[in-house]
Every structure is written in C-alpha cells, then in structure tokens.
Image (cartoon, rainbow, N blue to C red; front, side, top):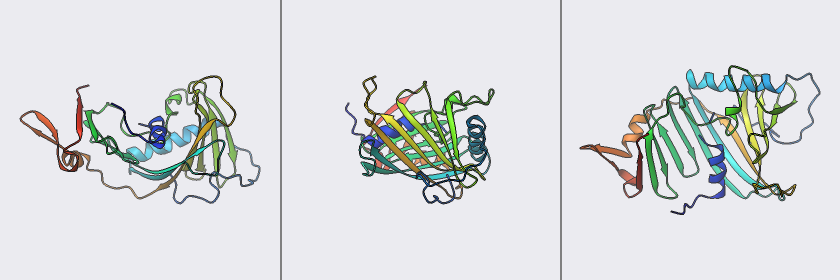
Length: 256
C-alpha cells in the first residue's frame, strides 16, 4: 500500500521515536556574533543535555512543543513545508505527535494513529524505551557508561546561547546536526538537521534538505494515556477494534 506522507513526515520519521526552552530566543539558529569565551568540550555538553531531559522525563514530566520547517539547501530562505510537533512524557507514559500522526503509550501498549493514511497500529510497549527522542536520530551514539558522544562534535556560543554541532559516520545520511540550547538550564531552543537528498556518493554540495525545529517548554501536564487509548480502541470478547472517529481506519495489531 502506497502511503501518502508528506516530505516533512518522512523527515520526522528520521527524527522519530529517540529523546525546549522557555521562549525561543532571537536568532536561535542565526549567525549572531557571540563573545569568545572558553567553552566546554562537545562530550560534556552532550552529556548534560541528555541528563537534563532524562531528569525531566522521570520527575516533573516533559511538555515540549515545536514548529517544524523544511527547506532545500539550494533555496534556504523559502519554506518548503511547515508542521508542528508535541512531545509529552513522564515515566513510562508518553504522547507524541508530528503533523497528522499520533503516538500514545501507557507503559504497556503503544498505539500509532496515522490520520493521513487512515490507519492505526497497536503493539506492546518496549520495556525501557518509553517516549520519543528529544534528540532525534543521534541519541544511540551516546553511551551513559562511557559518557561520550561517539561522534565528532563542536561547541560554539557564549553564556547566553550555545550550539552543539555534530557529524557522524554512523549516520551518513545526516550532513550536519546542530542543537541550540540555553547553557544555564540546558533547555533546547531548537534543532537544525541538514540531510542529503541522495544516499549515494554523487552528492552535490547544495543537494540536501534542512529541517529546523523551534522548541518551547510548557508546563507539564498529567498524562492519562490508558484513557486516551480507550477512546480509540475497544476490546470485546477478545476482539480488538477501532471506535470513534477512527472506526473506519485500518487496524494492525502486532503481538510483539
């Protein structure tokens, strides 16, 4: 079956399901001149960013909302697509959305609902893997034991705003990955990902996409994912079916 995802959905599939900021700062991904100071190394900054979000997910909870903009490398001033994303996570529960795709997890089951292709997938939650990636696509490169990135990184900025830029041979489709954050709180302001259009070696310098995500931290909300899933899924006599507005969608149940 041919799916109808937009390019931005494909981008967020790249971003999808590993681990903001108070208000988006002026020039968060711009080229504002910054005072030169002695900066920490990339590994220590990466460790602090990861620990910040792990702490939020396990304590007060995380409520991160963002705007996603897609550009072409050869035309960086023209928005190709625009979408939104929401990440809410506490303990083993999470809600994640990007454009018209939703994920619900109550710690036991995970439900994916795709409103573009009118389909849903129900599966068991993977133990120890609760929540979407706040740092999409690269957090597997981080080893809590070794406390290192495992990839090349560079830190720029000052005491108001910093940029951690990374490149990895493990992810050759990613040209460059930058996290913009507040060094006082280690809250993210945004992420910028440059990724090649071609998967082959004949890549032209400007033949790439640019995904920019501006993040905002909002107050944590109480997650009741079991209740949310029951609004979409019904179980009767051992049979699982979709109800409500999704009742006519196709359903796949994965007994993993």
